[in-house]
Amino acid sequence: MIVELADYERAREKVVGTPELLAAALFGSGPVAEAVIAEVSGEPVGFALFYTTFSTWQCLPGVWLEDLFVRPAHRRGGVGRALLARVASVAVERGCGRLEWAALDWNAPALDFYEGLGAQALGEWKLHRLDGAALEGVAGAPGPE
Image 1: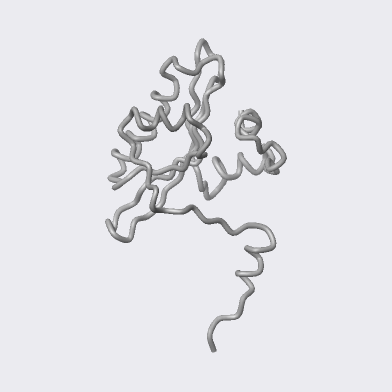
Image 2: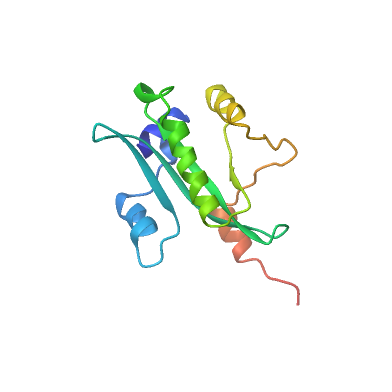
């Protein structure tokens, strides 16, 4: 389903992880993420992958929803809402101050879905990323002497 999500997001070539890396991230000695799988009649039809964050302003943990995906044949049937509700309940059970995620600006169905749930788009915030050579460069940059 990860490759299906990447296809939908027009970024299949960016999927470089392996099943082994995913298993280590979810089930290894120091798990860094969690996932919930939605099934219909025993068939996996969607997933939500998330991990813990922290808010310095709230001084509370939070949850970052990295991915929410429902296979096309099962959209508009409540699967996405059930997955998001499960992640939200995990956040509440753990005393988290918030649940956050990003959505592509062209993904109108997802944006409409989130707005319908009462989620607020944070237009004043810009998502930033360092990866690859840029990440390595910053990591190796000397600090002040």
